[in-house]
Length: 263
Image 1 (cartoon, rainbow, N blue to C red):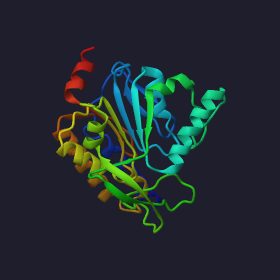
Image 2 (cartoon, one colour):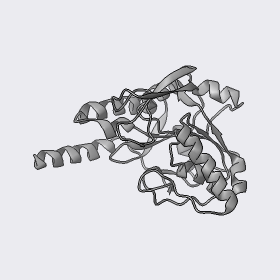
Image 3 (tube, one colour):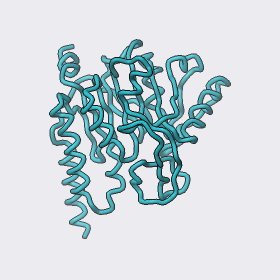
Image 4 (cartoon, rainbow, N blue to C red):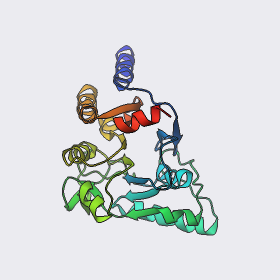
């Protein structure tokens, strides 16, 4: 049995690296479990970053603002996400330390109160239409990971508003998104499909395919779904520049990729 598990693990690791085209100048931002690699020579004070899915770890979101001065918009309709954001502001105002509660909980935010001038929290989810939907509770008590797609097959839920990414961009008067982070517990397939259908101007996409963590023995079927969506992004003109074995991926649109490679 252990031999089989080892073989599956090797297969998963190998499959996760298919189609990866390395991009020079990537740096890691965020906590151990909620961070991503992003291009170091890409974002600036005029950049627009959408971070969809916050939970209780907005380490990447905050570092996009503190490192590059980018305009960061955080989207999450869950009450605990807003509470976490507001608590961080309060701690920053008092000069007190505050930890991201996700992952190992060891990440300490390094942000000053004035830096929140470039960070905005919007209590809405992102989906493929504007409506009120059910966000189903995770199976683990007090885990901050509610899911529209009921990823963990539970019965309790919270109702909350969602909207299309295109609608949100229009409401904020944004013609493009420089960086989009998607961590939304199984809804990433729908949101990516929707943004491609609407041909939105999104230059860099960071996405965690959360189904991989809840595959319940269906590893190959899950990887196939992930690859189907990844291939749609590749076909739409994105390059996969980074991927890890549990399918957190970084896609860079080819025009941006080529510009960064030439620097």
